[in-house]
Image: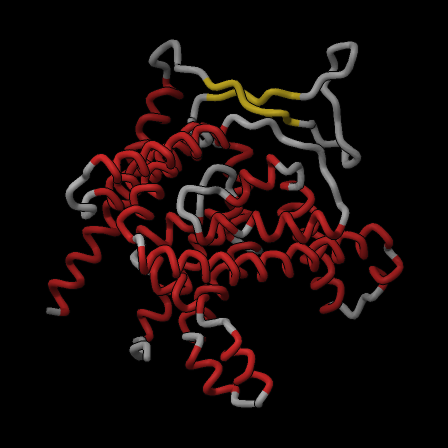
Length: 340
């Protein structure tokens, strides 16, 4: 049985859900890292694991209160509420910041991941050859994924369902960015921009009692795509949580070693100093997709050649990102001391 939460705890859970939702939308950043650093990763995984045959039985028997308590519904509900709010608020702000202050944003995320590595590794304990080998496997996997080339957009509903299963991995696997995986699969813009905007526009029109969208074939197509993606995400979230709960119970330190390595290997994805590589036609002109957006095929990473004003601010925000993560650690220690 899970303990009752105070009002402040409930508000913190919503805010943590906001942070997870925002992180999941940014390529290279993992919502699972937020859960890890904020101290609720294992409760998140074990709560999702409770969505099983017994839970479904309680639901179909009409024992809704028992179902709610069994799956730790208050915890999951508040967390998911924060994620949903994030997709229509915080993620919009992030889109604006990435468009106008890209270097500073990537620098802050880079610093946050460095802080996360320290946060997770500091209580690991003694390292031996076996755990170092797991660490190296995680690093190699993270680096390998960061240098893969993106595929082309594909709106086939079966493929979109598969994208949902894979894309939700960022919430359950710290260091594995679901958004970056969707870029590699070619469907990041389709699933996290176009379809989400279509849902937002549809809600607004319904509130205004405007149902003209039912005759908009492109809108209906995007809503079907989002539904398939959401269903795949739900399936992936539950199935991955069962696997991770099993692994965490039996191979906890080995799992943590892989996670630390994976997060370290993923640093290349959020390296602040990089330039977009665009797809070019036979004449050397930038190619555009069906929605008149530039097609990005990857990034060209580089070291800053001079200590300019922009470089100063980038380094400053790297330290800001590190301090954000460390401040969570300091807050938790202070809170435990106060409660004790």
